[in-house]
Image (cartoon, rainbow over all chains, first blue to last red; front, top):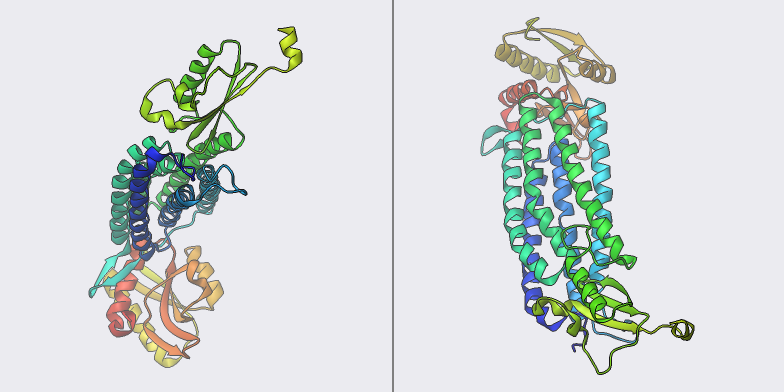
Length: 312
Length: 120
């Protein structure tokens, strides 16, 4: 048993994920700079830029949580280590996403209601006057590439680590092409003289941001209030956790099984039954794939009270 | 503007030298559009309101480089720079926000009139 919270078999995968997240931050910063240089007055561009900047929150949170999980040792003050830091980071990222999404939607709707006409003029580049819209389109196209590649690479690592923060980041990155497509529509629309295209595209992007934020918030809140473990990619109950509950129920009929999630780990309580004879590691109760048995970190037995035993 | 073949220009109060460069811009714009300019003396705030309401197509005059109106109207590149380092004043054109083709045309005309200043 290690002194920190991360199961031993996840160390190599975690290191790969950390490396990938550093690359993610680097490429995201290049996108933020490229988009920032050509923002102009476009609502679409501003919204897409804020979304790209927000895209830094999950990888930074992941890196902080990973550092604490790997380096933070159990102590008198933190006897369970830092396995829940990931959950806290996930919650903070979700709150930030949802709140900024609402703010962006408000801005877009107000711009639409006020019939604000975004100005996209020209800039001098290498001695030539170029319509800023072309540069915006180029920046939007560039902003699609890094997230698409990184998102695809993150997904299998997130599944292996059962890391919701990384998984949310992967999904956000993968879905970024939607934002890019909406952004391109907004800028091209401005070029065609459709003043409303800019605000409509910005509103669509902000709805996508809110959607990401609310989904993440529901899942993060469930973990913080000791809800049943949730599936990695949705707010549904985790099939793995259901299988653990069924396995425990099969072995201890009549007992009440309660599961909760602390970060990537599952903890089980078996109520109203006595513990079995002989020592068993919690992993013994993992029902399926042995490689994933690390997820079950604790199985506690709570025997019935004396009154209940007498009644029984 | 295309239908009436006229460009409604508002000119704020300015020096003789500034007026000369403003006139040059107006004549280049007139040449590029084939429209006849009609000039009206204006003061800044009512002129910007008139731009927004579509009663003017262009306002030319001296404005501070970091004008607080920059989000309400679209300024073209400067035709001339003056004032102190802390408070630079630029003679430039202001247009209605979002009229992107018109803005591009005036920007190009401004660069033609004062290539050295406009591309600084």
